[in-house]
Image 1 (cartoon, helix red, strand yellow):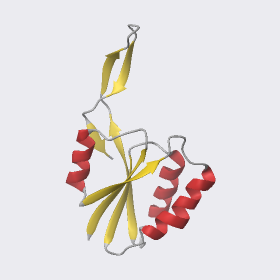
Image 2 (cartoon, rainbow, N blue to C red):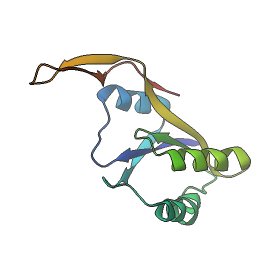
Image 3 (cartoon, one colour):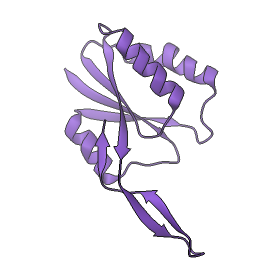
Image 4 (cartoon, rainbow, N blue to C red):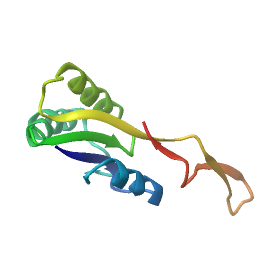
Length: 125
């Protein structure tokens, strides 16, 4: 059975090289669902999930994991609930998020020091 990742990511974001390597190692292939910069309304998310994604990924030959690279709380909640309550459903089987405990210090032009997420240290959990 083909293991596929569907990566949900804001159109203004991109994956780090390490995240891409993790996806390549864990899955046979992966694709993006690009989230508009301004996001979706609740109604738009409900429509996407229940009228498009559930139908699109209802494929017995596929083992689909939704991977959130950008946090979208409602979709994380709803897809996780769907997967948990429909164990015999073909297609959508798991939900994961990229996590990183590492932070790098960065100095801004005004001298202020901030913490930013590191490009390394990523985990798929």
